[in-house]
Length: 274
Image 1 (cartoon, rainbow, N blue to C red):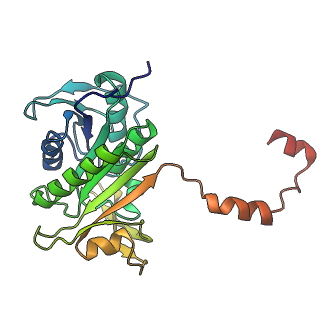
Image 2 (image 1 turned 180 degrees about the vertical axis):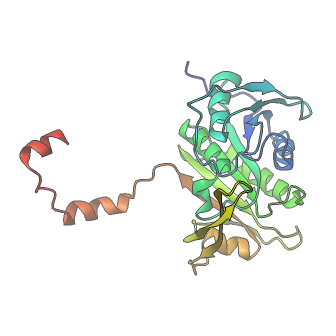
């Protein structure tokens, strides 16, 4: 069944999800902010799903249960991933396509390369795939006791802008909020994703039965000196807004490969099967 858009209804319909789980403080704060902007439905994982990326559940059944965790908000917990939550919300819960999907507020950064691994951003990306304007919000503070005051204000501001102006089709926003007080906050910057990565290693340990096991460790390294990146913005007290797309094609390389590669060396039979 194809679901209809809002068709001029007075109140926007907003889907709220996350990857920290339905009981996380960040999703409660985001839900309360979105209640100021429209009718809200929450569908979120029943347990933390950080680092799941765009994973979906295909080898086991999914459970979806109503929960009474948010005042005057229809809410559900899902046994699957953040992407599963969005898929189920669109197919089984929402009466129509939402006007906006917001994911977060994540406890921890999703700037730079972290966008690849993030369940928060992947949930928003799944909404964008469905043609829904979408935003992922993250606070650069991993503590569940983090002060969410600034993150609330930024999420409300950015969501208002998207509801008013929309987004290009299949584009989502990756919004990161710095770990500073409202008094230290310098504003919002539209940025690009910084060139940075995790330099990782696995700590090898031995369990009580003498078998080896491993913990992923490492450090985040920013190789990007530019002052237009998300990492620069966050380091300097700004919230970063990076437009993201799920089309991973390196379009600028197509012409280069077409011009420089010689692909005529395959036997005719092999070429015919390509």
